[in-house]
Length: 250
Image: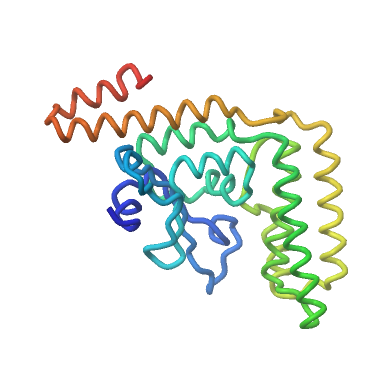
């Protein structure tokens, strides 16, 4: 089974990310697709394991294997958490619906550290651009401001909303280079300070619900193994479906 087969035949969740999901798309924006696939459990029984991620097969497409995706989300990886909250879902099956139902289980105050740390890294790149080329990459500056605002609002409300909403036009003005860099820096500093202040009073838990997520992954693996066994033995699909969803796979 090739990586392309895994994405084509075993994707449980797929969405659009990037500017289109953030409400910041322009006429020349790409369509970035992200997905999660569940590698069939029998593929883990041999020495050669399935890939943890697949780049492609289409342009601007990237997918994670379910377990890898969940581990990254438990670590509050910004890209993965935002993927799970995309408003532009293109495909979801029963396993994918269970995954999206766990959105809140992944959220914790750890997001402050990971989002801000990622933002600091991106800001250093922008400052390098200024030293080398006299100006930052304005598109990246726009996305950094959006990310900082997203982090602040997550800590304040406990909800991760990735659409720019009413900040769309101010952010697009940054992308067009209409906002001087000192003003962009001032906004970054303010958003960072507001995120720091929101952390102390945040209603988010200190850590994500790892046990709940792990239970989901184990059940998904067992369900996959049951389906594979059913194919070999010719077990009726309805019987398998009852084992998987009727009482739950424990």
